[in-house]
Image (tube, rainbow, N blue to C red; front, side, top):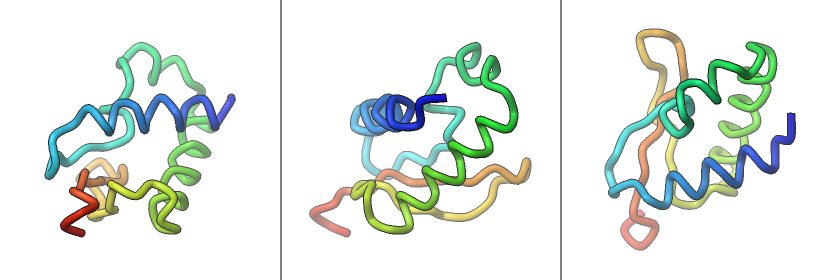
Length: 82
């Protein structure tokens, strides 16, 4: 798995979302593409993405908690108002 490539794809999709949109990582990818990833790779990418958000490397996203299915939930924010 190329985490940088997946991160780039995620950032492109996030930039197309409206401010305030809540999402899980799998929402950013075509369902087939996401589901074809082995579970271990999805978990690894999820941890990496969450760490990047927490460290401020993804400036227009904030972690908002866990969804009922235990996936991480995020919100796109306007970096000028955040």
